[in-house]
Length: 99
Image (cartoon, rainbow, N blue to C red; front, side, top):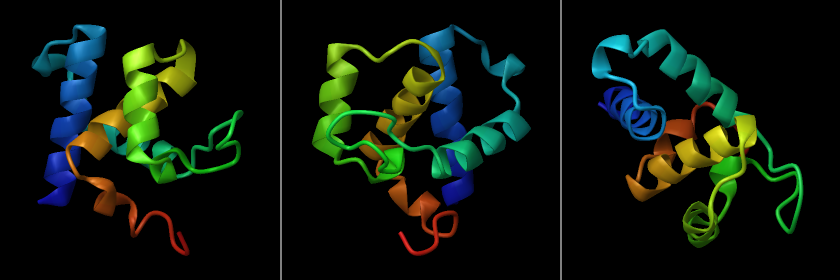
């Protein structure tokens, strides 16, 4: 159920932000993005070095409302936002041992 929910969130994120239609959605790409997100760290600021999935939700929501940076960091933060607001952080428990 959680993996299915994660695919839905990744699909929703890509549809909202990249104007993709659902027929161009690739579940393998979604899996790869989730695996990448599991080890992606914040490169700067107060939370430098912290896993994005471990960032406090209010910070992620604030950053999202302020405008996400371009490129991979922005994409990963956008995905983090969708996961956090949909309560899917438990997805990452098996992917981030010792978290």
